[in-house]
Image (cartoon, rainbow, N blue to C red; front, side, top):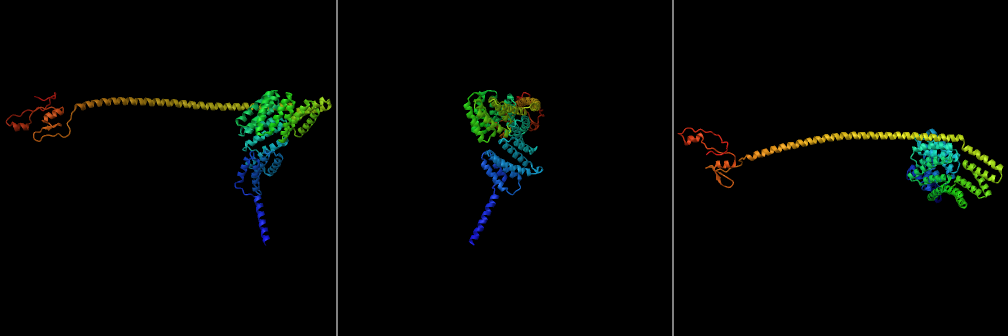
Length: 551
């Protein structure tokens, strides 16, 4: 019984483990996990892969194609950054198979953008593995998923990728055509790398066409873009190409100075591919200046770095230059063997320019050995390839494309001038409005100032008149003395007491304290009282003008 219980517990425990593994509990939403994983791709690819894998386990059995493709895309990107291109290729092959099962008409915009991105990274892997035809094919499939309202940055990257593919396959006409499209798309995008590479590839094409002055201008412009956005990893690429043009122009001192600067940054940033090409180019300078030992040392180091970085093109280029060095130093057997190896690899990876250089060099070597028939055979192949790459027809088409670029630039300049003129006109109108407003304001201020002045003047005049009247009134009041208040008067003799306590006759007191004066007479009642037998005395009742008493 005990064994049976233990068995049941064990089975339940195993079931719990299996269910936990197939559907792990995420403490946040899968979208947030994927966002964290995407942000960690460049910084910590292993952590990024773990997060994406946990989301895949969580989504097992679900039908959320968008999240599943995104999780696999992040794993693929992390493997690219780890340099595990074959493993990444398997992941992207799985994504490609899943996308092929989707119905195109039912694909939403965000899923469409994701498909574009997946094919873009698949193209990058093929580019790294020097399978340029497949790279261009993948990029084109990615371009097919780009919609009008989709991510313009990924569209620009794809167009630049196609241009790079054709450039490395020495199809300069198509390379220039796609780089023009990429430049147009880059103008509507805020992606710095797209803007940089659209200019950088223009320079590269001009360099291949041996138009060094135009190439130099484009690379210098690319340097300014990289410096503006503080991208030393991009700047080093443009600086490296400028130094390559200096090598082709035989300005070795300037080229060597720039190469040393590029190597220093490449070592700091661990950019093996750039470092490999820089060492290879420095070796070319040493070959031209006849420092053959130093040249060989740099070429072997360049080859090793390219091999470690899985950079097949770098390995082939280094081998070609090693073969040239052996040829110069008279080691014809080693030179012949190395050229044969380069031919084989260049043919396999469709590196036409490198193949053409190898054929020419091998023809010269066989001519030295007096194997004229074989020398002619390789030279004929070289001429054929040269005409394929640089045919008159292609040159004329490239010239047409260049003319289109210049015309487009002219049109853009005209549009820009029109915009500038429009802005200037608006500024002028604004200025005129401001001047008109200023004039109106000045006129109103003058009117207000005039009114204030007149008001003040009127007020001053009114104040003067008021002051004059006040003075007259004060003068008049000064001349008038009025008696007011209670006057203490004797009830018997009728004398009035002053403030000092003296008693005065009524006439004397009033005369002293007012302008009034007295003239003595008798009223009819008193006449009758005191002089009953006398005739009525005539009373004048008039005051003298002098204001003095009559004697």
